[in-house]
Length: 141
Image 1: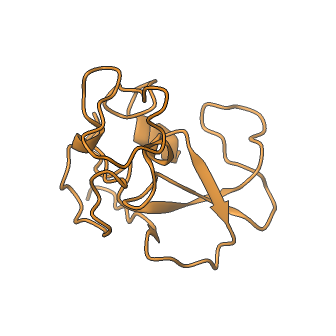
Image 2: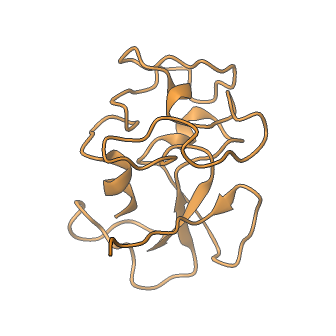
């Protein structure tokens, strides 16, 4: 579900339709140009522009569905357990058991490759860190 929301219908590595050039995966120089001519810096806080801190929501451009910070800024805990997805890959739920939970999205500290919408990391659910959080959602009244 997280990746579906982050992609907002896009198939490229980032919600603005761009992909990294080879060699840019860990570039922290800032103003990172993607292969579609857009800048990663316009949609994601990562080591190249994150200036070693979390940023307020909506400081950069949203994805096509109006969701902010789906790439970069803070890693987001997801409900999925980590492991190989089973069954339908369109909206996989992850494993039914296991100790590790998935977090996604990248953060202000790590390189650009971690901000790709397809990237998944994992750890024990009791793990806490300054660049790891969760997204609050609400339904419309």
